[in-house]
Length: 104
Image (cartoon, rainbow, N blue to C red):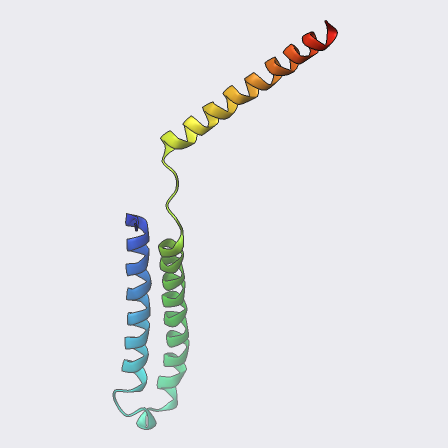
């Protein structure tokens, strides 16, 4: 079963990858890149690298959200802590009873 956070993470990852692919295709496929002058490339290349880096970070965050299991509910955590505390209280009592029996 997929949680809400995992679904959102998958959507974020997918959207970032699709936008990066469309941006790359739009930049290099459409138009005539051979007729562009050097000033265009001086602006285009840094913007392209920065945009792809931002899309990569977004996709990475989405992937992490999609593949991380959801956390336990607070009620489960508190009940586990209470059970552990009860078990810790029982252990010293059992040790005291054993000492008494061995002394007798």
